[in-house]
Image (tube, rainbow, N blue to C red; front, top):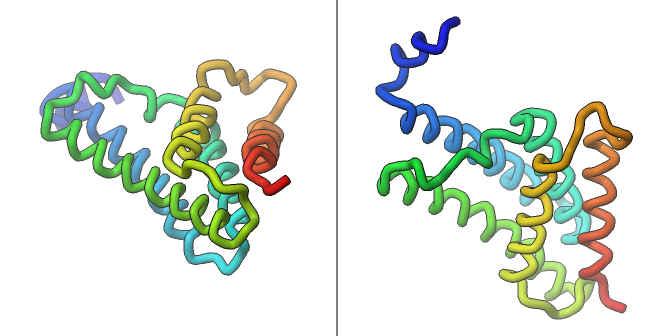
Length: 154
């Protein structure tokens, strides 16, 4: 397929960018929905979500789709992406709040913590090298270990 063939399916680059974001967010929302339904403790839900998030970004999206320039989207498309991105954030916050309510996690600001987790995981593609010394699975496990350990009650 040649680059020009894409324009048979999309009107312009902005539509391609929006489709990439929508696909990425579809995948993340599917992961979140599946994990929310599992009958496991909040710390295990959060672990599974972090690991799945890392794998999705590195192994499926190859670190690209979620980093494409949001500012290049039209206001309507930008709003649609932000609404869906915020739904993922809210789902993560709910898991953190469940962990706090159950006593597994120390009392904390769930919103700030969710932003910290999202920021940490979203930065991985900036430095990850598939040919490097750590696999995506090792990175996913270590990030989940580090991020969840910081939440546990002392």
